[in-house]
Amino acid sequence: MKKTISIKTKIEAAALLKVAPFRKEIRKTEPHKHNSYFEIIYLREGSGFHTIDHTSFSIKPPTVFFVRKEQVHHWDMTDTPDGFVLLLKKRFVDQSMDSELKSLLSKLSGLSCIHLKETENIDTLFQLLTREKDFTVTEGLLKALFAKILIAAKPLIIKTSKTDNIIAVFRELLNQTNDLRNNVAYYAEKLYTTPQNLNAICRKTLDQSAAEVIAVHIISEAKRQLIYTESSVSEIAYSLNFNDTSHFVKYFKRHTGVTPQTFRNT
Image 1 (cartoon, rainbow, N blue to C red):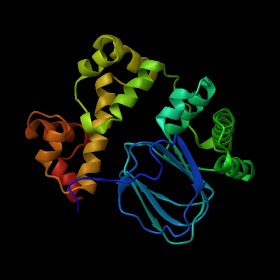
Image 2 (cartoon, rainbow, N blue to C red):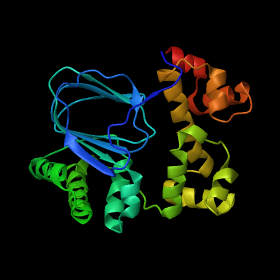
Image 3 (cartoon, helix red, strand yellow):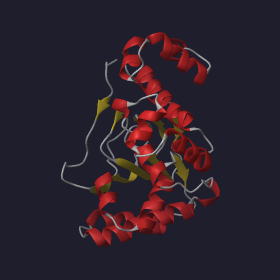
Image 4 (cartoon, helix red, strand yellow):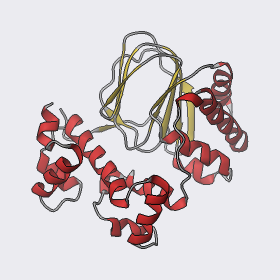
C-alpha cells in the first residue's frame, strides 16, 4: 500500500469540461482521486461494484455516480460497461453566468449514487455534449442534463435546505483536503465573517454547527488515508494539522466511536 493516494488526471490542463464514452475495457482500478474536477459517471450497462470513499455501491444500471474532487474511488466491474463520463472543472462553473446551472450542480454534488427511471433524453444530452465546443451551448446542454437527472431520480432525492454563497465557499475550502483545519475561526477569517456568524449560517442552512461541518470533512479525509494509505496514525494526524497524535485519536473516536487504528483494522 502506498503512503499517499494516487491522483489521476483524465482531462487536459487547459480544458474546462470533458465528456466521453465510458471506456469498455475498464474492469478493476486502484483507489485514486481526481482532485481537479467533479466527475459524473452515467452507466446504462454494467455490473459489479463502485466504491466511493468507504461506501461500496452495487452497479445497477441505469445509474449515475457522482465523485467530488476530494473523494477516493475505484471500480470492480464484472461485466462490460457502457455509458458516459463527464469531467467538470470549477473554472467552467466560475465562468458561467447561469445561476440555475449552478443551483442544479449544487444539488447533484451532494449525491453519490442515484438510479434512473428513464434514460432516453439523458442519452441524447450526453451524446450532444461529446461533440459540442461552444461554451454557451454547452451551458444549456449541461443545465438540461442536470435537470433531467434530478427529475428522473426525483423520488430518490431528499430535498436539501437552500444554502447561500458563504456555505458554498466554505465547502469549497473544506474540499481542499491538503490543508484542513479543526478551527472555525480560521475558516471564518477566510470567508470575511466572524465565527459566530459562520456558526449561525451553518445552523440555519445545514442544521449543523460550523465545527460539525468541519468535522465531517476531517473525519472523511482521515478515513480515506486510513483505508487507502499506509501512513501511520501520527503522520495522518500531522497531515490534518493536529498538534499531537493523542488529540487526533480522541477527536476521531469522539466522532466515530472507535480509534483510528481500530477503524483501520476492521
